[in-house]
Length: 362
Ligand code: CP
Image (cartoon, rainbow, N blue to C red; front, top):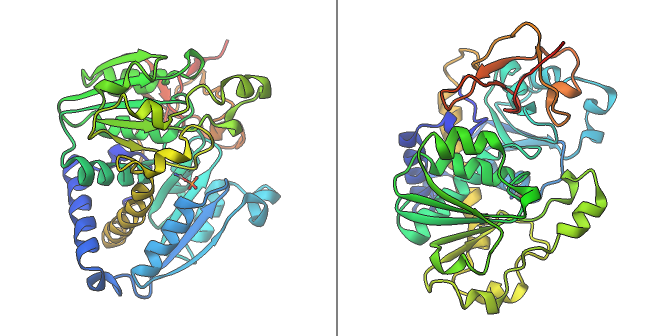
């Protein structure tokens, strides 16, 4: 059973195929208006969302299908203590495909391992957001005409910015990508993203705290929000929240064809005045998100005819635990802790759900 949990679940060729389908949907929407007739999408959103949930729903409706779903954990039996695995098995009886957002890292993987229908990760905590990446790739392709030979700046909360992690993973498979990672030191990119994707793929990169000084070199600037909901220390959030604000004045330092992207929602990090700049592409990204979700739903439903269960690498390693409080294993006590060697070829054992290093218990 195909699911989309991590952007690298799709090969580069499959990603290209989705981009081509998306272009065809834009050109010929009527061709697809009954493509999913009789099919149901379940949206299971345990964290707030405007774009992802509504674009999934709009995507399914525009494909002629229908939608059921919940928009918070409180409205679902999760609030009574039901496990993610059980919820996934239940929804498999009602729907043909699930789009799931959850605050805990790895929850959609648990759902995919237990559902008998495809599961799409619509964001798991500060970990991954592969369908935002599909929207981002389509935006870059349409605006820049290519997905290689680009200098891409990521700015803001690179630690918890799940869209950043997934987009870097996707870009690591293209050639000639240079990364400029702009963040406060407290919000630098996680080790697993650096080791498994940036360093493993020999991507050229710099880490800096300086947005203005970096602007002139960029083809793409990917701004992100400092994510209040991920901070345990409110004072730390208040100190960092306005550290980067892209203004019309700062845009004068950027190339005339640099594009500005943002997964949204925006708080303060892009002044509203920048919206009028022709280089601002974040609302085009929103539209592209719906189109790519249409292409993805079509692909996964087509491949759902293969009933083989979804599989993930990893084993139980005696004496090792995941101790990440943001991991789904921290709240689902029955879930077996499973690990796999790091993708960079090293010896490091990583939790298959959250990618954090396994800890040997005394
Ligand atoms: N970009 C994005 O995931 O937005 P939502 O949180 O509104 O879904």
